[in-house]
Length: 301
Image 1 (cartoon, helix red, strand yellow):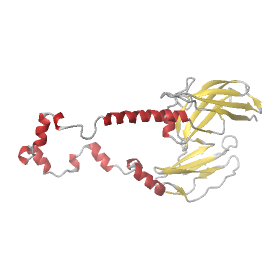
Image 2 (image 1 turned 60 degrees about the vertical axis):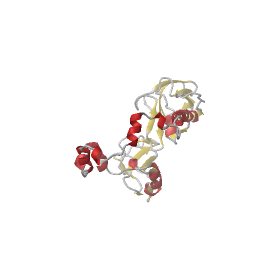
Image 3 (image 1 turned 90 degrees about the vertical axis):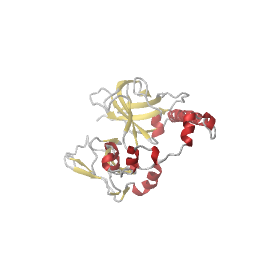
Image 4 (image 1 turned 60 degrees about the horizontal axis):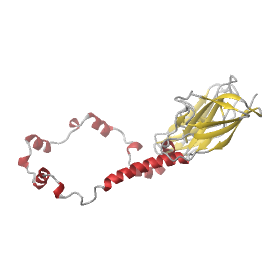
């Protein structure tokens, strides 16, 4: 059986003195059965969050690849360049922990293969670029706000009509019949618009909470493990069920991962492998349990 190994040689976020996103250099080394690989290969790069959500890919979809030459086992790419989708600076500002997964097709008929381990990715220049953009926006708003200081608007700057309105006393005789009738009526549900009624009737979720209140409630309402999991050893051809540990918390969500990659559709408390295959099914499985207030994960080998 041929084995493939992968080593990350070089990782650097280049200093950028401008707001536009700049590519990130990435270099690795591939060997096959201990021999450095030479030739053209198709790569697939994905940046994902701690909970397994993909936030950037080299192409428009999960099947897109990029052709890269490999010489004496070494290859170099510019993530976000070389025809790839660009990487937004805001990506590193909005997400604290990001990881890079690499897949490769050596054109040997075996298709894409995962090159572990997935690498934590930090790009300080990208985060700084996004931060500079945010600060520039705030500074511009502050500049406009500073032009209107306390006491800068005086009566001399107001028109006669506004001054006249300010000096008038509003009495009931000045109000029309329809306004008076409206003041004396009780507001009922039928008087509200459909969108407003839907907002009132919508269940209270974490997204509707004030950020400060959500931060206060998160330690109390986030899921916490109340049970444990055990590693499994099963015979090939048998059915095996992987079960998430019991957990406290409400509205729990589940996402199963294999070797660090989220498995589509594996979002139940139990993950069932009906016909265990040593080649395709062996590996490290992880389940991420989350709700609107937080998450935790457990790994099953």
